[in-house]
Image (cartoon, rainbow, N blue to C red; front, side, top):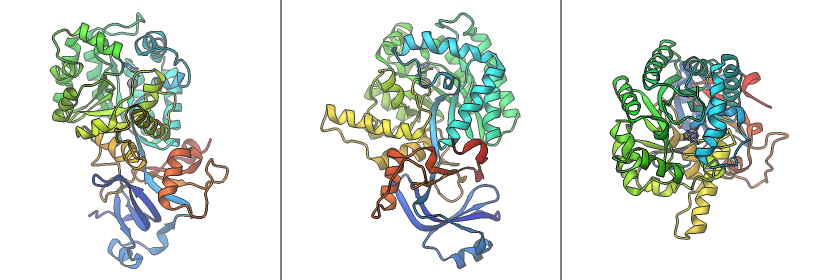
Length: 448
Ligand code: GUN
Ligand code: ZN
């Protein structure tokens, strides 16, 4: 139990996931947050008098939620390219490898310009916070200084973030958008050291080989060693599209599979998250499970680039950790609510193709967007649900927000309210965003 003083207490409905149950609804509950931003207590049907004595706060501190309001955990975007936010919503007319060469690498090369980077990174951090993303796992670009700037901006706006300086030493369509292996290694060291030196409490570096086709085997191995020696997170892409899988077979003829390429370089760890995985074999999923590697399911991107349809049910059956990602800008939406909807659609597509397929429920997808994401990023000691001792990362949702997109009927219960919010809601329904107990600045993160 926390021994810090209670800073504030909310009373009302709280919805969240646990490892045992995808949706737990606590009605008329009391939740206290201490001065460090951690959850001090959550008590359904608890006696206010007893709690206020045990935790030493005045009952006048209690803030009552309105009708049609509830708190849910902040959402975790396990895969987003901050730099690609600059062209989100455009340029989705070709498959992955052509798309990278035609649009992505030319755009990312512009982030050498710190002013341009500052503008785009400020936009993406503000927009994702406003949309309810309290934790984001970002790809920046190859440029160390603008990647550090992304870390600073996430810190300034109070978003929990993993930030990666992208590494790539081959196969770029843009002459200057590529490093030598040595530069990539040196700059990764500098990035990690300088980001850690800032001591931002909520922002951590993540070792980021772009994907196997962009990295020589020597670079992959160097990056595996850097991550291991410094106990760091790792992120990359895997088995997104069949052309890419074929290319990796050609580039790494000695590897048994795409997964094996990363495994050989010690890149599959308890702190690794790989995006997509649409075309992984069951054998590869077993290797994910054995190494503790997680998957980021990015359904908008998989539809938009016609990459494939990940079978999340099969991933979960293999006990592989899984979260959701927007994959801006292969995915056109920066909202995790869109990722929730597209994940449900993807699961229904699989059921259309095979009626035996066990469709994901909205409760399960809610868990993927919150607790699942925190597990996928190995941040579930700190965030993902309302367990006592975790940081208070939360969204105050008003399903009936005036001028908002949702209509209610008298008989709607909290479970319907959550389902309507997930399917129909947007930032107009998100009244407050908390990260580690700190409320986002309403002028910078709220409203449109
Ligand atoms: N594979 C390698 N780089 C990328 C990228 O930027 N976006 C997506 N969707 N896939 C990738
Ligand atoms: Zn991606």
